[in-house]
Image 1 (cartoon, rainbow, N blue to C red):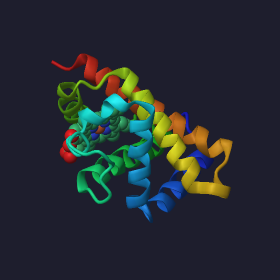
Image 2: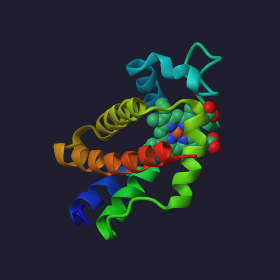
Image 3: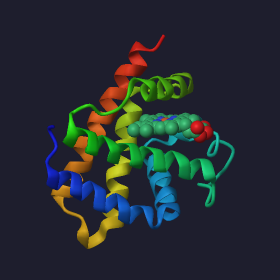
Amino acid sequence: GIFTERQEALVKSSWEELKQNILHHSIRFFTLIVEIAPATKNMFSFLKDYDEIPQNNTKLQFHTVKVFEMTYESAVQLRKKGVVITDVTLQYLSSIHVPKGVTDAHFEVIKEALLKTIKEAMEDEWSEELGNAWEIAYDELAAAIKKAMRDAP
Ligand code: HEM
């Protein structure tokens, strides 16, 4: 695969660490998303009717976990065989995101928020190499989802 063992290990260990405090990081992740692109607030059912980011919302946490976890899984797959994600999952993700009006540009917003959340969360343990590993894994995943969205019926 295009991913090294070391890159996979960096993504894995930081994801394990972030998971320990996922509620906190979820709120930070969505705070950053809305800061970077305020219009996205109206896309999410759990944000649109609230003035502030909800502090204990299962759906908010779920979307965060999905983005982080699937990026981690993408890293593992890239290391193993270079295939990021199954067609069934891609169809499922397209069927959710296309009707919500998600565009390619939104994937850049999520990426920026993801990388910043990780940087803040890892503090002294963060490195350029760690950030780059997450970025590569995310880019591959996002490319696959964006393509599936374009090809969606
Ligand atoms: C919903 C995953 C990127 C906006 C979902 C759901 C999943 C998911 C699994 C279903 C959640 C549920 O059933 O409650 C992902 C992954 C992404 C990604 C893995 C990228 C790696 C994005 C982007 C946007 C977005 C870039 C736009 C900013 C949404 C919205 C929903 C949703 C609006 C509906 C959630 C709601 O309103 O309750 N996503 N997503 N997603 N996603 Fe994503």
